[in-house]
Image (cartoon, rainbow, N blue to C red; front, side):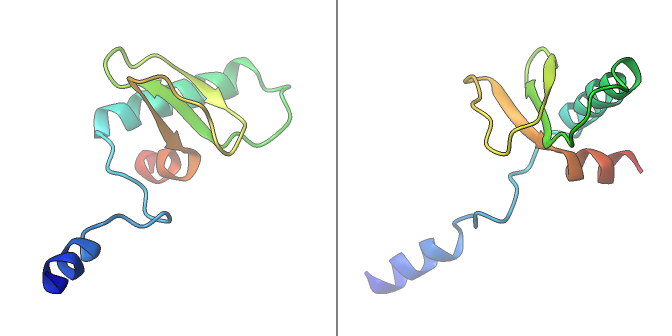
Length: 86
């Protein structure tokens, strides 16, 4: 029984590791983020990422570190958007 529990512990995701996100969702989040930057250059502050609906790909730029998400939404951090775009 101990070996079974130990094996399960090896497969749990750590808090520092981001969950896998569909590349199409990341691209859509990138478009939302860069459109926001072009339309609102006067807004000060560093966004933390984009909250985006996994089905409709509609989303909003988020400035808080721990966003509250709706059931079909996921959060794409800014560093993941930037690393995917380049």
